[in-house]
Image 1 (cartoon, one colour):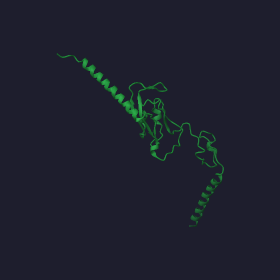
Image 2 (cartoon, helix red, strand yellow):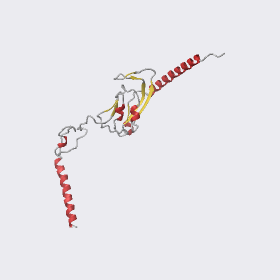
Image 3 (spheres, one colour):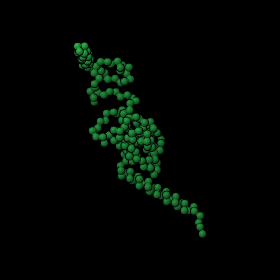
Image 4 (cartoon, one colour):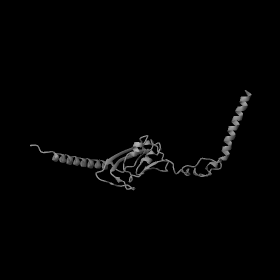
Length: 196
């Protein structure tokens, strides 16, 4: 019994000495260094707490954080939404009646983005959507601290098309399709041989 009491006191003293050593060493603060700094792992003393948001940790160059979409370069190919493992990307496209422009790499745009939403509350930051994008318009930025109190604020809407404009484009496409169908039927009627 006496052995257990002595062992308990040794353990308490050892734990408290470690706590006190860290307490007194915390008066000096560490220099904030990026992880690729050769001296990063040699900092064994000092506090690791930083005064956020006044001081921030350096962000690695290859870090995966907030998604951003450059809509001028987006061809609305839907590849990012298809590869997303958690379905956090919602895209609704409307076919254009003619070419609507070019991206920065020269790709012709033929689809309007009526809806391009990314739910960052669902996003698992895997980066697959950035890999499959043919025009490289979807990228991961170095922004990591967008905290919201409402989950609906985590849905980022990148499409700049209003619902009225989207409906207008759909009506124009339906009208063009109807004209093409009528022309096709008229051509088929003319190619039929006349019966007596």
